[in-house]
Length: 405
Image 1 (cartoon, rainbow, N blue to C red):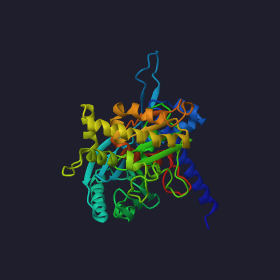
Image 2: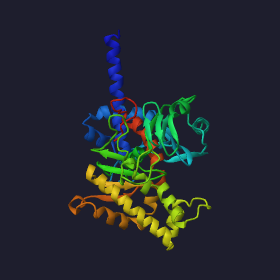
Image 3: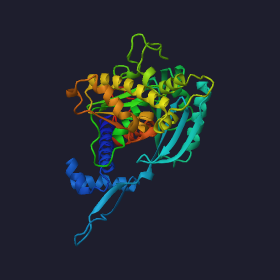
Image 4: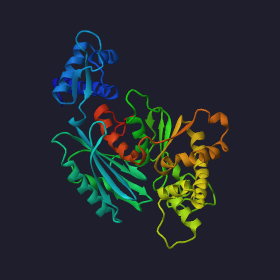
C-alpha cells in the first residue's frame, strides 16, 4: 500500500507538472508575454510564476529577453518565448501514395523529412516506414524526442494503431501500431487522417487568434473523410469511428463503393472519383490515370472535359455539404487536398449546389474555406497530436490520445 507521504509527493509532482504545462501553453499561444501577464491570466502569485518560469528556463524550454518594442525611459520589461529547438516531435502520414515522415520543433516547423514509396504488402511497407522513422529520429537529442503522431486512413483503433478497415489501401485488421512501434523508444499516438486535418486547423492557428469551435474538415485524398469538431472537441463517437461521411449514401442505385456500400459520397467527390470520371469522359483506358492536379491545371487552361468533370464534381460536393450543414450547423467547412488548390475554380459551383439544397436561412453564417495547411494538413495534425500531449497533457476517457481541442 502506498504511504501517505508517497501519495502527497505524487500529488505535488502531478500539480507541479500541470502548472508547468499551463504556463508553457500560455507562452506558446502568446509569444512575448511577461511574467506579470502570466500571473494576471492564471491568478498565480508572482512568486509562484517566478518559480515555475525559472525552472523552465533552466530546462531550456523558455528564454527571456528585454522587450524590443519598449520605448519608455527606464528598464525594458522582460518577455518570454518558447525555445522551439529544445524538444522535437515526429509524425508519420500514411496514404495510398506511400508515407511521409517528418521531424519538427515545438512550433511544428519541419526540420527533416523522409518519404517511403508505397508497397502492396502492409508488413513490408510498414517495416520500411519504421526504419525511416528510426533513421530520422536518430537526429533527435537524447531525452528530447516527445513522441510520434501517426496519421492512418479509415477506421482505426486509436489505442493500439490497429487498422480495422482502410478500404482505399486494401487493409483490413492490419496491426500497424505493433509494426511501427517495434524498437521505437518514443511513444506513438494514432488517429484517423481526417480528424488530424481538423486538429491541425485548431492547433496551428495564428498566435493570439481564436481557433474555430464548431467546424468540419473535409479530406479528399484518395477517398473522402470528415473530421468533426463540436464545441472545441474532436467528435469520435462511441467506438472512434464517428463522422465517416464519405460513406453516407447520396444515391440509392449509385456506384458500388470500395467499402461495399452503394452510392457513397466518396464515389462521386473524392480525388479517386475525379480521376476516374475524367478517364471515363476521355473514353480511352490505354493511358495512365491523369492526376487530379493536372486536371485542375487543364481546367484553368479552358479544357472542356476537365471543366465539365470539375463542375459535375462540385455538384456532388455541394450535395454532401448540405447534409453536413443540416447535421451539425457548423460555423465553417474547411476543405483540403485538390478542393483547396482548386477552390478558386470550383467554389462558386459548390456554393450553387449547396444553396439549391439548403434554405438560405441555414447558410447565412456558414463559411467554406481552404485549409491553411494544404496538402500538409494531416501531417501537421499528426505533429499536433504529439505536441498537444506535451503542452496540455490532457487525455480523453480512454486514456490513449491527448485531447488537444
